[in-house]
Length: 298
Image 1: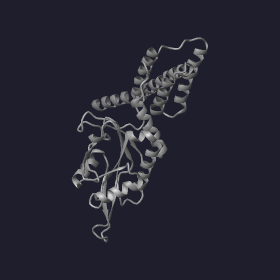
Image 2: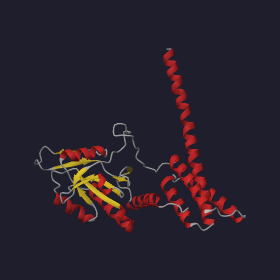
Image 3: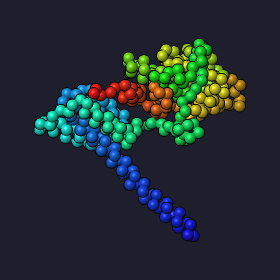
Image 4: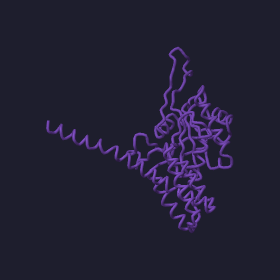
């Protein structure tokens, strides 16, 4: 009985601490967003378009789209803008860049990218939903392709099969629209479709299928073993569904839907849910591209 009371007390203390921890994390986020607003107000008042653009990217990527965070950002912006009107001088570029770097780190710590995939220290230690983005497949020309072939570029990856009646065509149409929406920035992204039905999806079938949507979408296939391994690494589930009365080659494949975005370093960044609007996908990807490539001048 004494042990039970002690365990209950420990559980109660832990549970009572959760709201306080969550509140503190939220306060950290709101504080960082407000300080980001202060930088935004000063950048706007002083005509520093580069810093203002950087602030916009950080807000798009990290700040929750709620009234509370919006008001915190707006309050900071107005305060700094008004202070400049009262005579507060513009900061030196080096000082402004240092402040922006500090706020950026606070923002990323308090508000990670929404939808971000957690990363473990190793495949064995990674969290249940973490992705180890490794694959070894073949392109339609028979060339071996791995996840390391596209380092330095983003990769937008989906799993499916060419006989898929609805989910896969919808997903590839989204890929096509994303590439179109990115314009010249599409060169920084490799769209990839990995078939989970190598038995029927030959190289030629796969090439014709992906090209029908957009020639820039790369179709990949592999042996059943390599396909299963790649799907496992990406936490994608698939299995054949056969009708006992149907011929041996007639079946469907039940599989996970959605797309996974890998960053230029090859690590998984975001798992996009199935049917996420292409415009939203493109905006998020472009913002991440700019966040990784744009740096405030010093």
